[in-house]
Image (cartoon, rainbow, N blue to C red):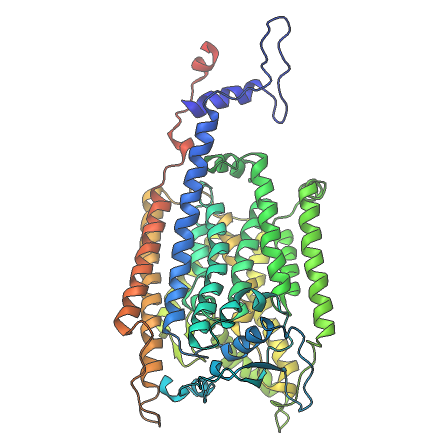
Length: 558
């Protein structure tokens, strides 16, 4: 009834204007809102806050589980990023170039931070006992890091625990800080898509992004995790801003207290919140941010819609903020010589281009795709092939359903994204193999790869799946997703505990800081929380759904 009264007032008053005061009546009717509109708005805001905090907890706990079961430098160049963070928070923002031909820089960090054999887990042979016990000395050593010339933005945020705790305790806390930073972004993305009744497949896209590999990256000291989280928010905001159904989405968003004009303002604000850290995060951040914007406009943009957005002051401020961040990123990259590469990994034998192409197509394409799903450590633990195929079936269902119900332009963009990622990776390796060897990783193009999920999800019509079918789809997918997360953690813990038992020279017996049982209990608890959050999402009743349609006779009688 309350929302129906508001609809009547909206019909009586033109959109964006206030009715003039009545003359001779002594009453001021310039405010056409009903007296109880504010309580309804506040109730929606309270629901939005509950969704945000619930999502923040879930998106934080899952990578936190990985943070607590991973030993030092257990995956994806963490040693390099830890050393860079420890140097940045101690004032070594601009480390001088090296003179020994190595790619990267040297940072002065406490000796207590680094285990004696910090890189022994990269072989996939030894258990985590091979790391050894770091010295307790706080004396500084010059330590090489390949991230020594990276932008200090990310490291200045997550590296502060390494000041009072220059040891594994500080590494755990820095991981938690990185996980929390990414969880905030994922929570913003979920709150944005939650009230959209016509976009119920967007959470499937978000769960595809939040794959086990993504959790590992989010739970480590690695800017790649923040890069993926920022990209997810940017895709969500841009696809909503450019959607042909933006007005309907704005009506739906009223359920959370940011409908109408507030909806567009919120999307613009979140675009800046995601775009600025993406541009500053890593050397390729500016390219990725620009590519996401271009692909979104190619898929959904219309000239009059774009002109309308560009006339808005908040859009101009957002563009300015992202532009300044991009300019600062370019200045840093030039000053720090990010584009220079050392010679430490230069192959002794020149590989023919035909051999590089054959190797990439036969072996690297498959690895890159698997790395967007479930590859752990230094590719030393991986989800089984049948998990990857099952995951691929979900992606295929989402993408094919989306493109068969979309415009031709959107279809070409969705299909072009994976093709461009694989082709671009091939080109990069052709150029880089003669210099430093095979370089490309699937996690590097994840910020663009996820675009096909969000574009396809927003193109699926709301009438395609009935509520019962939608709940069953989510139930099956979430069950499989939870098994993938839990089993991936199990495989990784076992790899750290035992290594390759046939070849390992160090004794097995390493245990996670929260014990093996605690690790599995932690991740299962977090998976159940995600299941509860998803169930709430599916069972939540949009306030507009409870308002019965009024007949023409009722309207005339009123």
